[in-house]
Image (cartoon, rainbow, N blue to C red):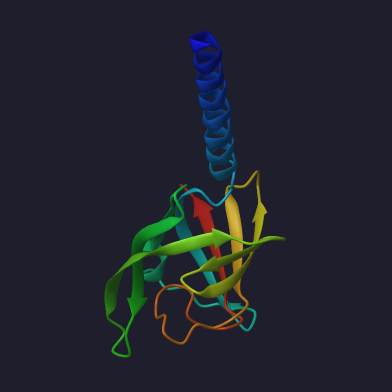
Length: 141
């Protein structure tokens, strides 16, 4: 009887570990995971990125967290930074939610370049993805 319980215990642990490994593999296979550098900010078809904004970088972690630094230009044309600490989620069909903002993402060049289009605006968010319709191009570092 003890052997049966021991065998049952071992089987449950193996199944449990296999499920956790599968979840981790799925998270790690998401092409968004990694560190990304801003290359373009396209507004109404025109690339308006400044040297300041090109310094922006974001890191998408497998846990669903996002960290980085946004570089922005104020009205006086001064470069300033904003620390980014938020969450991300892969929805479906190249659609992600980043800090409550819906972003359509197209990956190219073997998932080393991504084009992010703001599909819904979150008025409480003033980070990188702050304007509906803007397109942000990132290169994986």
